[in-house]
Image (cartoon, rainbow, N blue to C red; front, top):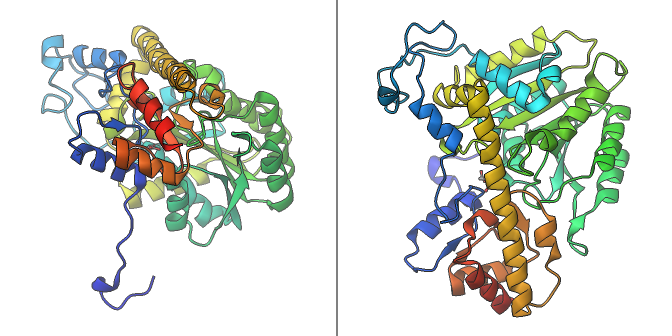
Length: 435
Ligand code: LMR
């Protein structure tokens, strides 16, 4: 945008999820309810530090950077205060990140067997957003696609990231949500990719717990998408922000990614398949490490191609953007994934989160039905992950906020973790009131 002085710059709206959190925090109404930002809350609607993560803090922590071998260990009582203070050193990580964390994160995502394949290159990223940004800038500079296909609707940041990082790539929407059924418009999605995408174009896919709709593809639908991607030689960017959190089972939530790898990129797959695949892995939600900004970007290259050049370009982008990634979140996640005991606790943690969300889905639906709120609310229970795409209009959402101090996204997305047994009846009554 051209401007003659700084004062000419227009004031931009704040990203909605952050603006809602700020407005909610300012609100002094005692029964206010925050259903805005996608952050997990416990049954008291409070932030929850996962039990597996709490354990890390009371476990011995190596005194060195992860690339060196540990020289000594702290006692558990000291360890509680260590990760943020001078007892561990704070040296730079290598530019690609914490190697042991990356190996474990890759295994979690792809399975140990696929994770050890040499056509996957991994690099640490500043959470899911940083991974998406790196993927966009890498594609724009090196692949030069004409179009990037983005689901309609999607997480608003997909648009902003591609607008800023890849201004020469045209953003196109593929149909995803069908308001008439409050379900998936799979035929629309498939035919848009079939008819409009060109070789090397990028398609962004949500691996599980689609944000904002909470509607995921079934396995045979994923197979059809994989087939178009291969035939049309597209480049896939999977955004995976909810592995484990969606269903409570980390393997089940990674099914689509593993299927794409096995059928399109394994050594036995056709050499004339898709252009490549990125997986943007966020560990914010499934480890409850929102503020630590920990994630990874995995690049999968067709099996016949060398990976070193692509990796060198990713390293260069990281160097230019952040020089090298930060340590704390990588240390935490690595410690959990590297210990059989903590990993098993983490599996329980994601089950706890997924089951609580499932529980409040059922509660909300039954409260709405009990009150006789007009309409069919079964979609609330059928959707998966952090969100329900309620079908409420932006005017109704505004009334919920103005009349009842209930905060949610204007597109009708509700973050279910803000609900509990204590406020669900209030929310259901308020919804009935604005219908
Ligand atoms: C959300 O979708 O609410 C979260 O992922 C927070 C964000 O970055 O918008």
